[in-house]
Image (cartoon, rainbow, N blue to C red; front, top):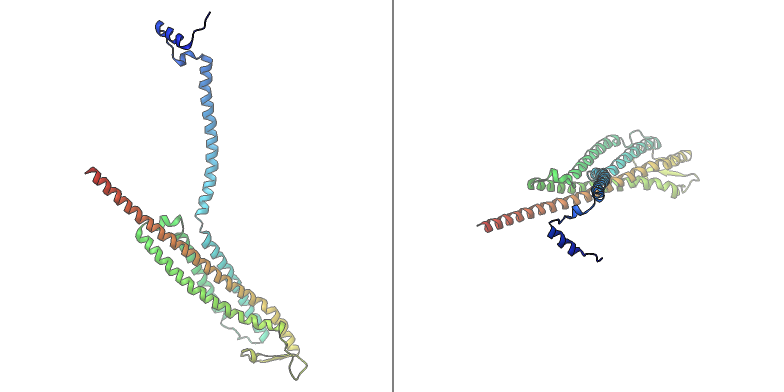
Length: 291
């Protein structure tokens, strides 16, 4: 007996009025499997998507928190604090040991008052630079300086702070050169020969080094004590010199951050103006087409 083809069977069903749909042709068991499979697949996809969304949310929150931190300004501020701490300790200890070594209680009498003013003012200035750097960096600047007038004010503030940092950086470079003078003078205790011409003992005369001290000359046992205390004293002045260099480096770092923020503020303002121009052109085009 010959098997009927699919077209012949469909023609026979049409003639008999018994044409069935594909759903009616499939058995009930296969229908149940097809109904169960999509539900299970949907559940598995939903579970995997929920796990992925949880992981992405944690990572996105962590990255969002990091994006809010002004890393450049924060690093410069930390370097500034380290430099101020080292400068304070080095100069205070160095001034006290210098008075003991020279046997002069009035030597560098102004250093404590100067340190108080310099350290407090530099801490306030560094904190101000940190706050301005945080507000001028992305993405905080989009919320703080969102209008054109605020953007212009932010640019002016950053330009003023850049010039101020330039002056401060030059001042601290000069201070580093000044602090290098006692380091150089005390380093002579390691290299120079202080033996007197007509004497067998070693002597040092402070007048030759520009120091106005009640006692001008140290010889014999006094010179040995002077040499021993001077070799200990040089460590304090080296620490103060390195701290002053760190402060100058932090100010240079602040200038780099300010220049980057200034360039970003200018670019964002130009982008805003271009967006307004595009909106105006689009609105004009829409008005022309409607007319």
